Length: 222
Ligand code: PCA
Image 1 (cartoon, rainbow, N blue to C red):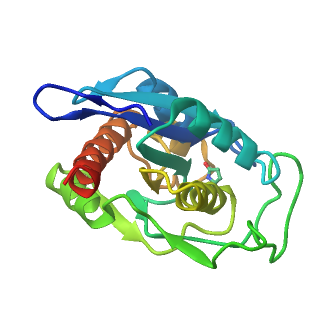
Image 2 (image 1 turned 30 degrees about the vertical axis):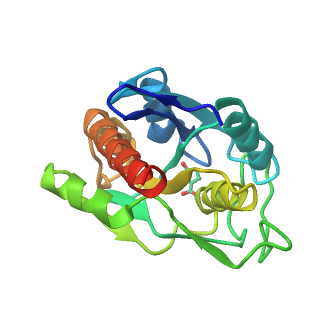
Image 3 (image 1 turned 180 degrees about the vertical axis):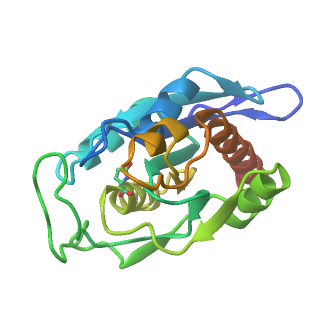
């Protein structure tokens, strides 16, 4: 692994942020917007790479692993939309199950494992409690979530953590569910669901990245 250590001992890292393409009845997915907005930006000398992911159980693994192998990130943060939530949801766990949909290929699995011989679950390895604390201290509504569901968001989280674990990569990863943006909520019939401005969500993801970078340093540079 090539690591670029600066004179002051701070490691220049690479951060992969993924977001999803629109799916189902949604014609817009803010998670993709955030990933693409952050692409090329730097936080404390570490570079962010943003990537769009397909809402496809069958295509997600290859799309994700190709990016991880190309970028060789120390931090992977996967983002996805959680329709109807009012706050930033930092996920605790990914489970080895596919049971939702249909996805964008029309596939609707029932009780199918993501990895046939994989463990039942993986915990996020980014500092979820610290991230929620930082977000709240910055005035951003946030909480831990104990289930990322059984659709593509859970699936990408599981694939990322499984890959890092089996390849023994010096990397940490986690998943963050984000709400609708106001324009999307305004388009819904009758009572608009909760939403947060895109700029606020972007700030939240930057805070999560910064907190994760600190955590990586503590974990691997001691
Ligand atoms: N949200 C879905 C999949 C894609 C996305 O943005 C989910 O929560 O699983």
